[in-house]
Length: 519
Image (cartoon, rainbow, N blue to C red):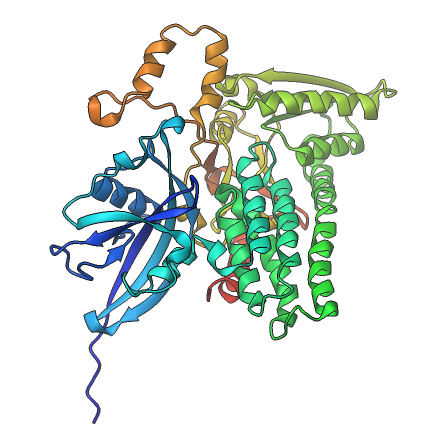
């Protein structure tokens, strides 16, 4: 009878690579000391166990601070890597690795450069290595190169393909004005540019799937649900080519045609959502208020779908007056842009209709309760919908809904979204707040001569390790609105319920496991 193999201890860890992109790209590797329990004297990234109820990215930041003293002042999260699992029977461990890459900031960016790296007892020393030289595990911990290449995809792609992917990711990262529908279209267009350069890649199917994963995770992660669903649909159509190469001209043409077809389909989605809203109002709202002459709506941020849906529905209803209240939506004031767009579109569509009247008011975000008094509907967009029906949307959405529920108890809260924004189960728990440049928030202060602003600015620039007073300006773009505050979801298939959302989420998981799970 064969001896029973010892059970492997399961351990989930982060592997955080510190990368300098000045000049030739380099990675910092740290030599593990005698004091550590595993892989002594071998080079490694900054690693550590993910604690219970801690997200991988939170663990990565914690370990970096503990082992190098680096904080957000000195580094920025540059890329996520696809997690993977491997076994090391020699130490009876099964590792699940979550790779990250953090870019070192230099002095002209407010960082302290490599002088900020101060190692702890877990390391004997550290040094820089050319990223292109890390190809095996001869001098490092097991699977070192594999972990690195999951964040440095350039090592496994041709120069043209990696450049196309980098360009697409940079465009997504820098775009803070487009909604998730527009960003997904940008992502698919960039992905097509990547596919163009995979014709001679013998392992193109894995490369294509990994490129899709990076587009979802390393572009604008807070808006990645729509992007992921769009890519899963593309990969489903590309799968028929998985067993062949793209060097055949017809196969390569088919792959590009697949992306073009999905881009074309996207153009019809907003119109289908608008039709769903019109149908909902004609069947639901008019039954509730047969004698009502005014439709009153509160919304925020900027959405061409919501704008056009309001005007389409108004045109179809037997009412004369449209009352719209819009919150300004700091820090980029998209609400003001939305108001301007609505007025312009209303004048174009109803200029000759004397029986149609628009009253529009823009309110400060802090005036949500005042703006919500007497409204029939709160209309929200969604950048992500969790499997439980919560929505992630522009910050200010939750106060607007809470104020409306208090000021107008009969109000209906509707979410406008394509179903592609439904995320697989777990998205809500894994969602990380997107904290953006505080300068965006502070710019209006600078122009208004806010009293005492200089004191805040000075303290913000003071390193935390030199003062007992820490000052931050938080510029968080998105927040969650709980499912119990939402009445219906208006999508391309009509108005759907929480149950429909949950069913869609598990369909997304099935596809994500199929196409992205084995990378």
